[in-house]
Each structure stands twice: as structure tokens, then as C-alpha cells.
Length: 214
Image (cartoon, rainbow, N blue to C red):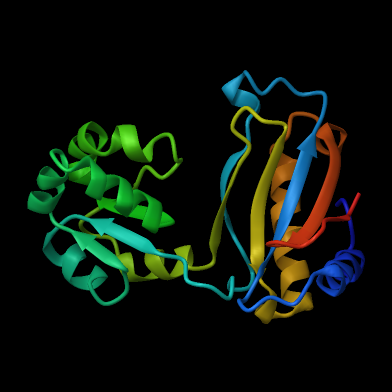
């Protein structure tokens, strides 16, 4: 592992101390810089959904697309439920489709609707890395949505520098450190050469100066 929880906690504490007071709750973000890797090859890119041990301290918005019992169950736990008919209406309303894509972090969908979703929303959700995870009619959708509340998406795309959040300051330094370690372990595991593909890592508040982890 790159760093101990104590080492990460120390750096997070330092970046919070260096940040100016803001009139809103800031997040703590990681900035990861890679080396010795060809990201023009999609097989080398990081594109992971990481379930964190602690909540993010901010709202993670989840949208479900589908009907039947899944829609009934999702209604009380998802931030938005889109029916099949509403999905078809989005085909002629790209502005609304883009707004939904921007306003939601994760999407789940009734498995049978995936081809239609690919046609209507694929060009909008695909580039954002937000294509829905399919759900079978016999699955329990409630725990799936709750799990996504503690999930972050980590994507490098073609850039050797990429960013992800580890949570809001209000969840506390220990929880932030545990979240950071979970993300960094996952990234290290997914890289072709592991630690040798990591050039440097910084931690910072949303608008504050960065502090170097490694």
C-alpha cells in the first residue's frame, strides 16, 4: 500500500489547515498523476466505481430508468425515476436529457430497457461514464441504490492526471483517510505496473492549495 492511514490523515489535516474559510462545505479531493503508461490504450485506463467504507457527507444522486415493481421500490430511495414513456420523450429533448445526466451521479435501469437507453441516452451518458447498471426484475433494487450512496467513480480517461473526491470535510479526518486508502488501493491494483505507474498524489480541499501525499 502507498501510505498508512496515519500518514494520509496528517496530510489531510494539513490541507484543511492551509485552506481559507469558505461559506460552504468543501470536499477533500485526490489528484493522481501517472507515469510510464500509455493511456491511448483503453485497457490501461482507470474506470472504476469504488464503494467506500464511509459515506461521502454529501448527496450522491441516483436515477432509475424502468417500470413495474422495480420502479415502485425505487420511488422512495432514488432521486429520480424515469418510466419507459418518459425515456422515449427524452429522445426529442436533448436539453432535458443532458440536464438529467449532469444532475445525477449514477444510473440504474431495468435490464430489458438497456438497448433503448443505449440508443436514446448512450451518446449523452456514455462519454460521461454514466451508462446505467442493469437490474433484473427479480433483484432487490433498494440495497443497490443505497450502496451507490457510498460510491465514487474514478476515471483517468486519456489524461495522466485525474481527480476524485474522498468526501466532505464534515465526515472527519479518520473517515476521509479510510476512504482515500480504499481508492488508492483500487487504483494501484488496476494499474499495469501498480505503484510504479504512480508519479505523485496530492490532496486538497475543493478550492484550497494542494498538499503532496507522495
